Image (cartoon, rainbow, N blue to C red):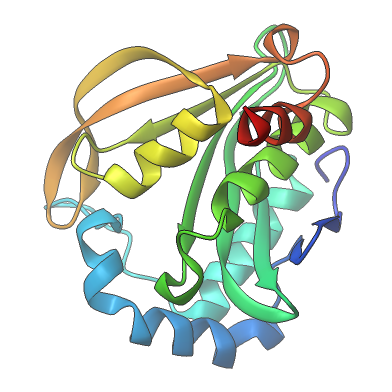
Length: 199
């Protein structure tokens, strides 16, 4: 199990908790309602790949296995008690790296209200303080202006560009790479977000 997992994180109207099997109906409803909005950013299986698109049950099962093995953490996002999206900590590497990547998606109905910057800040703070990680990376397609705004609001710096990095929406897509280390935010990401929103 990942250090610091399972966990529930909360700030204002935003709550993060482990994704669970009983989220199936709410998860499917949000994904269905947002299908066209999320499709350009969704991971897909490359040609020749053996992994098939997962059912929700198999998705949660895989994420729970990853958590047990210390490889990841999958958080459901709730806004005012209603399921609204997901933040996933992937590819946790221990040893000399102490590194992970973070991915996220959100219900369009609550977009633009500061939900995702708050959720990502909560998760990064948790990764640094409770999970003992040193560096968090976020990979974003250059065309994804909504996701780019999240890292900009959090003050996470761009560290590179990865051509044809991930198979997204049916093709290998370029990504901009953003990263932050624990030394860069000694007071925490949530504190940084609050400070920047007041400036």
